[in-house]
Image (cartoon, rainbow, N blue to C red; front, side):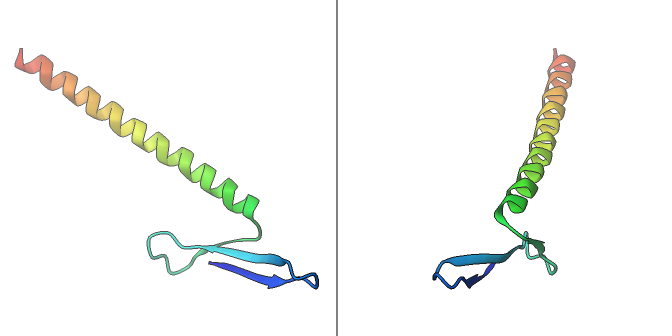
Amino acid sequence: MIRYSHKWTGRQRINEIDLRLHKQKHPRIFENESELLNYLEGHLLKHEAKVRAREAEAEKENKVSDGASK
């Protein structure tokens, strides 16, 4: 959700950006777009690390089960 106001020239000015993930009751509030992008970038890096760890774990389990069946 973006809260904005209008400048005297008619342009929109962003006052705050509320980000609700997965039905959060207390959203994260950002002052501007760059803060939001920095947060999302960090969140994405953490998520990618989790995905890589899961893939490595699944690959390790596949190697163990393949070796045991031979």
